[in-house]
Structure formats: structure tokens, C-alpha cells
Image (cartoon, rainbow, N blue to C red; front, side):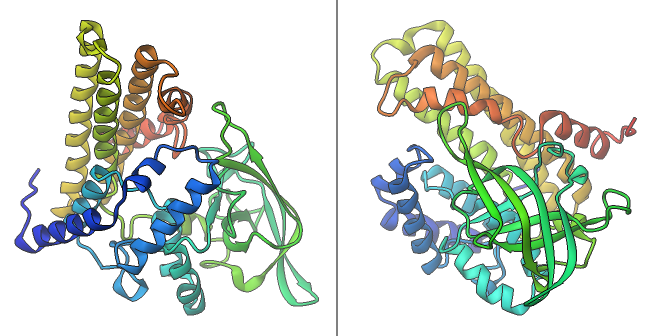
Length: 388
């Protein structure tokens, strides 16, 4: 594992640090810990997205022709570390920026690229991703939402019927990258297509989902005879699975956010415990903090091995498997930290951030691929074990 930073990368780091120091306010940092249902905090983060985009810092991994900086892997690593350590808010369209945008860049029309990508980067439009269904969570290929080609009054359309669930920001979104079944007779991985859907079309019903902590970060989305223009197809017909896997084109150092985020959370937890008096004198608390710190260091090494493999021409197949393992470890660390924070602090502090994190942490080993799925990926792609 070798991370030696050339002079131009260190110059990139210095430039970014100076810009963050000049533009990242204490109010924006505080907005990170506010409720996801807080409209004022949401708009403050949207404003931050626009500030970053206007300065060229919103999507450094994107190619320059789409408003990015065409950053190298090392520059992406530096960017992730510095923005996380500075406690800058995450992009509102983080799923769109990392997952949907690369697919639009590869498969979209010129009109889609020039119209949709700049507005996504600035969070002028909010995006969601229509993948999970009540009977198709981690097993995306089992999705049943149907799209049937039909001639309508405005020309050829896809008529969409079905349901999506756990759709992040679905109730705030203007656009959805929607995965639908277009060939029910084909093998399940081969009969899926991807559509770019305007969420304001007639027949779309969105119901916010209230989670364990009382937040509404997700939504349930119903499609009732929704007519989607045929030119909204992203990629070839029945090649949606291929579109779904186009997520690693530009963001190759994203794993760094896993360990830097946990470093920052641990620092905040220690600060919050210290502010309560002599709670840090408790040996049991100190031991648990030390164990978490050690696991975060392990996570850092694991992530950096994956990034190093990318830098030195290693197999992307194996790197993806290592990143999947890192995601599992990240989720487990988050749950351990949340349990410790709640045991020590309970519901103390303004807006009780650690009590809230205790509840939301239950999803860390589910969202983005369950621990069972990520362990299977690691077993097959890193250890070379058979599927059965």
C-alpha cells in the first residue's frame, strides 16, 4: 500500500483547504447534525451545493466537460479526506452524483447531459433512485415494476405501473432514475431497463416514510399508468442491469469517506462526553472508545488497500470486493459507536443528536447492500469462494 503524494496533489490539497476555510461557515457545519426533515437546514445545504458548484468543487471526479475537475484518484482521496475532516455537508444529491451521473454521462443524450447534470450538481433539481421494492431489496433483479411500450397521444411512451420503497429523498425529488421490467420473459437480470422519469408526471404518488427516529428521509413511490416518453430510456432497452453497475467510472476514492467520517464522529463523541464533566474518567467508557478507535484504524487500512489497488492497476473485481467488506465494517463500527454514545449520553444535547444516531444506526448494515450481501461479494471476489 503506497500513498506518496506528488507536489501537484499537495497543491490541490492546499487550494481546497484554503477555499474551505474561507467559505465553510459554522452555521453550515452545524446544519450537518440537524434533522433531515428540517426544511431550513435542507435549503441551507442546497445553498452550499450551489456555492461549491460555482467554485468548481462540487464534483471534482467528474470530467471537465460536465463541470468537474477530472481529478486523479489521489486528488479524489485528498478531496474526500479534507471535506469530511472540515465537516462540510454532504451533497444533497450524493446518490445522483456518485451513481446516476456516471450512467447519464455514459448512456445519456447530449441534451440530457447538458440539461440535467449541471442542475444535479447545484442541487437545483433533487434526484432519487427507484430501485428497491417490497419484494426486491438487495436482490434488485427480482423487481416487478413494469414498463410497457405503447403509442400515446404525444407519441411513443412507456406505461409504468408498480411500486418502489425506501426511496431516499423521493418526496423531495424532481427526477428519478427508475429501474423497470420491460421483458418479463427474459432471465431476470436481462429484462430490466432504466428510465429517467420526471417525478411531476401524472400518476406518480409519493408517500413519505416515517422511520424509527421520526424522520422522513425516505419515501414509498407508486406508479399508476404513468406515461413516460420513450426518449427517457437511459441505455439500451433491456440493459438496465448494465446501467445499474455503471457507478465506478469517476468516483474511485469514495471509500475514504467511510473511515474519515468515522474519525470525525469519534472526535465529536469524545468532545460531547468531555463536555458532560468527568464521564471520560470511567475505565469502561475509555476501553470502549479505544476499541472503536482501533476498529476505525483497521477500516482506514482496509479502505486504503482498495484505493491502492486502483492506483497500481489491481483488479477492480477484487477492489470492489474489498470495498464491500469495508462497507460492512463501517456499518458495524457506526452501530457500536451509537450504542456507546447512547449508553453514556442518553438523550442529552440540543436536538439529542446521539439518541437520534442510535436509532438511525440500525440501518447502517442494511442500506446500500445488507451485510449478508456484502459478505457474499467479498467471499466470491476476494477469497474466490464458490457461489454455493
